[in-house]
Image (cartoon, rainbow, N blue to C red):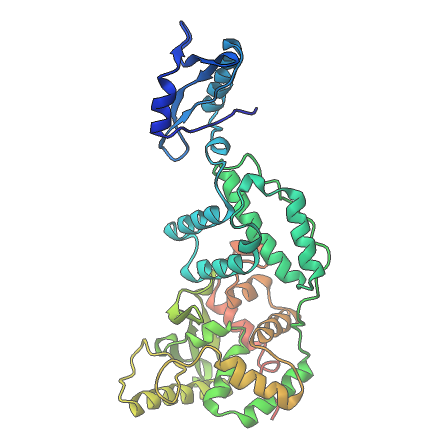
Length: 410
């Protein structure tokens, strides 16, 4: 059903209504004279989807019956609660994105880091092409052409998927709020795009890379690498604090560490912000003598860097600091460790590859999917796994099974 909608300014309404005459026995209908004869119009006030007063005010009907039918159609639309697509016809993609972001932050569905990531992606991929366009004007054919151009321009399949995912999220949000009648961009075809970077590393390459890292790096930095082999995210390792480590004594008087993740340090949150999801707030364990000893030394080095710079270490102090006693640079792991060792060995490795390596080795060693999921801080691996709960026993059994794959050859 199409209803013509128009809003007059108060000045326009005053001037216009002086010329209009109410049609007897038909509330809301008016007649007025033109050079081509009598015409009819409608004046019907209502509250829009934002709770503000608006006015339905079409004109130009040749008969009062035509105007009456239009008014009845409008009344039906109003009663059915479907006014959003009418009253929000001017909403642009940028306005809808900002509205969605604001609501998700207020309701804590998004963390600040999530909002920053979404904003960066929106500005980079969608804003120039569609930001100023009204939602109702973004056609499926135009959007499909945009996706096809990304493929032709050589973007990776994952990059295109990320951009499309955000666009679908915005349009679905608009549909849910009755701002558009439906998301016409659903099921957009994405065929092509360059393959994503390889995230696999063989066990032999892993051990070669790790042996070189152990030989060339300080124990402080090598401990950082070893913590990444536990499947931790880069921002989680950079966000580790002294309070994150709890030293315990296990069977046979063997010490081990509980490693608790509280903060993540990223380029957008250099002083530490929330972790990626609720599932990321978890406890891992370091049980091998090698890693326990490295953590002991790393904690001592952290405290030394504090005292050398007239600072008093405390539980909130980040484990990894610069020589000046400030939190380590966000780029340090990639630029000063992984890039250097990769160049020397000829084996490409990135922090996130170690996360994939951990998951692969864990599954190959027979660990339960749900246990691996909780260890890595994933929200889910399979939907059914998301309903399980982590246990200390399961986590300890997992890390015990991985002592050999995660320990560099001597």
